[in-house]
Image (cartoon, rainbow, N blue to C red; front, side, top):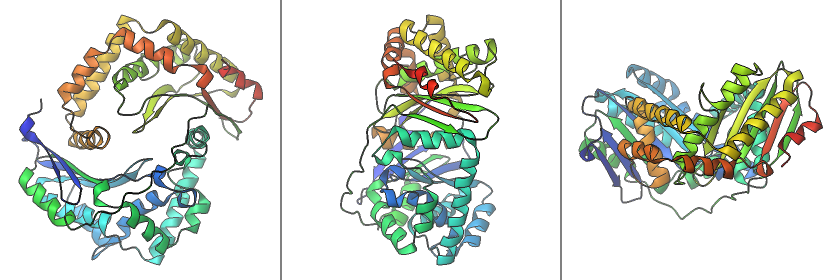
Length: 422
């Protein structure tokens, strides 16, 4: 599946990391410039800084204008984008092999040498404000964003990735540039690539563009904040009532993450899951009901989400409680575990056909675990998950004394808090 010779890892003298996987038959390359900075690395008055810089890099970088960047990337025939999360910013692209060096040149300029004007900043502030408004207009997204902040009081994890209208409007260019200089450092960067590449040539490309960067003094760790089982009830004009339950879960490096993936698959991760079958198929309570694990480097949250007719909200809450209590008390069956394992293995194997997925997997494993993880190893870890592993984790995590509850809808009833009473 993967030859050891196809994956290489280098650390430049300044601390920047390069992880690359050669796919001999590929005619394209997916690559990303990952920076270990996101919303959890911001102070309250800096909320949204990482995300705004993700935007500003495309407004002009190095000697290129925004139009120069757009035209060049369009000519490559592939695609490029960027994203900001709670822990990372990433500028990434997929291009044909022959355009790799040109694309890397442009994206490295975007990441390392952004040159926005004051007019660019004002314009992009307006764009981000519209992005914030778009999230607020979506009831489910709005609930999740505000509820997440309630779960982490007093810590940087509570910060919204997009920032708030107040912080975005207050940003000025000197302050943003000072913030960026403190975080965009080579020892906090990783370049990952997968596709039809030559390892030695790629190393030389990266060395030329990143080798002269100077490392900096270690940055203070942001305040972690502790999970709080919050309750958030928001009234808002909407056709549905949106409900989310949360339970503190596992960080991305926890050895039990494979059992968590299986538990999530059984609980609400697919169409045959317990919640989908009971809530939607048997009772017709919701069109959308699902669960997912949001795992950060050092902690995580297991979420259950659903949308329901407002009049049937109490019935939905009772159903969710009943199903999750049953799962915690009695665990999963052998048939459910086999199905979950097959589902997870299929997802793993299908992802290997995408150079973008392979690049992202390579990057995340290095950022979290400090090494590449062969697909065979991941598959073996899924195969090794036992009934006891999953059932024990269900008992531990699905503890309603630590559950949070978020509800947004046209009417809310304080009595709904009883749904998570231990």
